[in-house]
Amino acid sequence: MFERRTVFIVGAGASREINFPMGSELTAIIAKKLHIGSSSGWELTSGDKKIIAAIQYHMGQKGERDGNPYYAAGRAIAAGMTQAISIDNFLHAHADDDLVTWMGKLGIAASILEAERSSKLAVNRERDTVDLGAVSDTWFTPFFQILTEGVQRSALDGIFDNIAFITFNYDRCIEHYLVHAIANYFRIDSKDAQALVSHLRIEHPYGQVGRMSWQSPSGSTSFGSEFHGQQLPAIAEQIRTFTERVEDGDMLRRARRLITEAEVVVYLGFSYGDMNMELLSVDHAGERAAFGTSYGISAPNRKMIERDIANSMGPDQDVVKFLELADMTCVDFLRSYWKPIIHGI
Image 1 (spheres, rainbow, N blue to C red):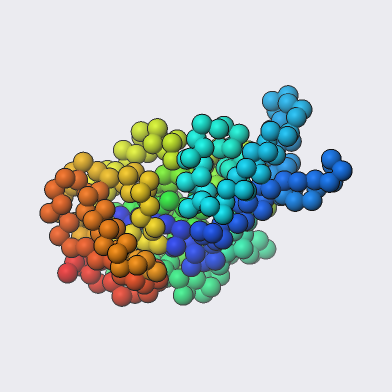
Image 2: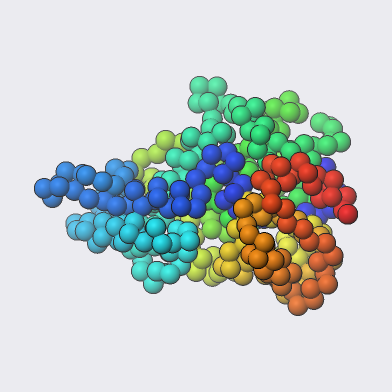
């Protein structure tokens, strides 16, 4: 169980362990979906049929007849994906183009929903179960072991008291996993597990691909669910660009409050991009320790990242009493740093 107030800042590398695409793999998927082309003016030769259906549904709602501006915006995104750091950076660069932003969100929504469905946390639709053994080699398992160490079934109400998440991923893996893991381990009804997880403090600065049924009975989107094109526009509306999240004052205040109040900050599968570090910056903070993964990051870049982390905690850099980045995967990192994270160095 977490003894100190701990906030996990989660990036794409964490979801990669359960087979989500990241980096160039994700931008390539989005490019393929949005490069909409046809021959003879009507026969589809490239692009995602569900995204085309989403465009047609959206146009019908608005009384529009010409889809060419949407298709052109999609092809513009596709053309830029090989150069982009990420889809988020590309949409930020084109924040003044509403069509590019809207098409980009469609591409993200379709890609992430499909990734949920093919991930290690995919639901067996016949049994409504998740194969928890499939994630035994991911960070979810050591995290759950830390979370539940010493916790009795009769005292579950406070299990999330000292833990919070800020996840930059569009997926709902954390909430989804915890419901199934808690229900299975403590042998409680799934609705009781959902009620517990609903108290977990978790912020999605970039939004998410819908709320699940236990989070929002109306207009919900099940984890990895099959979807129709006409559903995509509503799901895409729940995704934010960098510009939109900066304008979301309530979300920023909540996320920064979590960091300000934390005694331990853990960066998990996080890329430490400038835009995201800017969002995480606070004016002041108490003394804390910071840990993080730096898998595949060069020594010069890691040194700069350590400086950025210290700067993000406010002008008094002495508040960061311990800072260590480990060149490890998320699962190996949590297995290795279990005790320091809980008890300190």
